[in-house]
Length: 86
Image 1 (cartoon, one colour):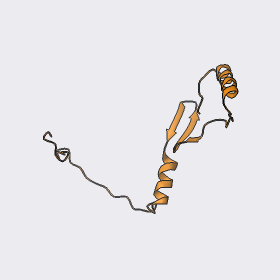
Image 2 (cartoon, one colour; image 1 turned 30 degrees about the horizontal axis):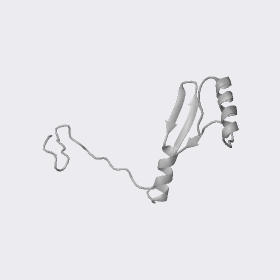
Image 3 (cartoon, one colour; image 1 turned 120 degrees about the horizontal axis):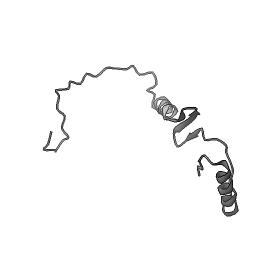
Image 4 (tube, helix red, strand yellow; image 1 turned 30 degrees about the vertical axis):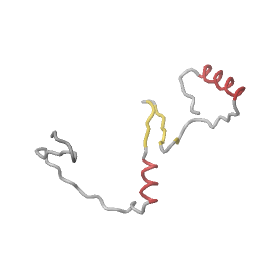
């Protein structure tokens, strides 16, 4: 369970209450959860899936693949197969 907020006293009270109902462990500040990296700064919270994508590319052997440019023209019209509208 992730508990967050800006009132440290309220968070502490909630954690104390939940600890009476469930076995809990405080793991400290959130850094990585469900494939999402969490970074805090003065500007706010930044969420990134960079590590997840790098792990995925490594696992599939595609980390060293070369980038390619794909040109799309604004005048091109794309349609979903079976769709009657543009």
